[in-house]
Image (tube, rainbow, N blue to C red; front, side, top):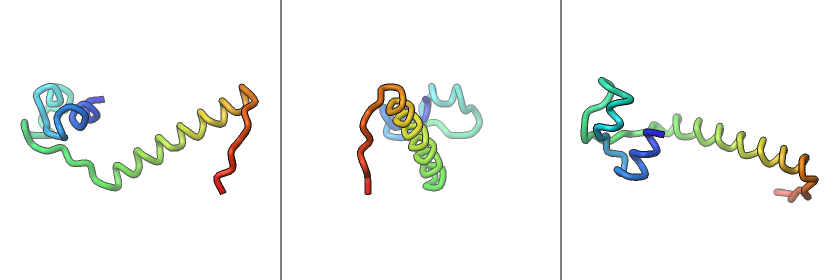
Length: 69
């Protein structure tokens, strides 16, 4: 949530609120940079969650599936 706050409200610039959760790791007013590998790992995780939710909804509500081929 704190990283989301930085990018949503502060354009990735570390603020005092962020430092309350990550003290000693970053400098105030520095840019929080996410390595591409970390970003891709998070995107893959989110994608798997979305796929699981879709599958559960399809089964529970007997929804038609759309082919992505």
